[in-house]
Image 1 (spheres, one colour):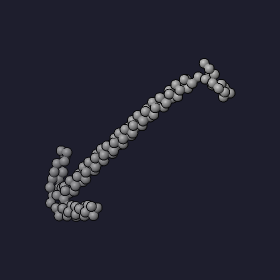
Image 2: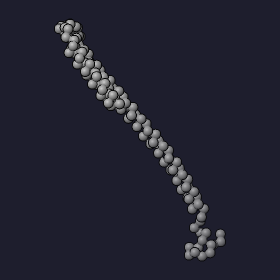
Image 3: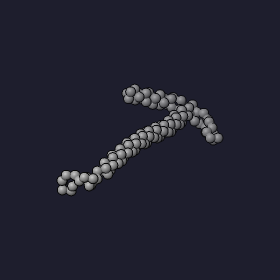
Image 4: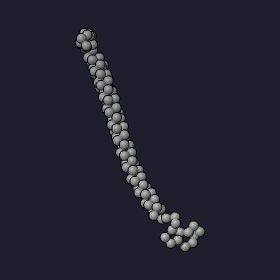
Amino acid sequence: MVVLGLLLILAAVVLGTDIVLENTHHTGGTIFNQTVSSLSLGGIFLAGAITALVLALGLWLVLGGASRNRRKAAARKSTLRETQTQKETLAEENARLARQLEQERAATASVSPYDEEPGGGSPRPR
């Protein structure tokens, strides 16, 4: 792919150079309501090529910025999704621990401290 791209660039440079050097006829033109005279056809072609390069650079910058914004938005969305999942997991764990604590408190509350003798003796009658 890279070799093909380099060959195309080389062909475009050779063709552009040939067009500029071979077209020496002079003509006039109007640019932004300003009359310009004695322009060669090669010069006009060169001005068009420069304009096309500026256009291509502008498109590259716009598309690159849009692509970067799209990647950042996808990363933010992924992070938000992970955070939401983590939040839900932590909420479930918190609820489970709260239930476990409540069960332990209930089990501790049902065992009275007067059920057994403090010295490990036989239980007292109620």
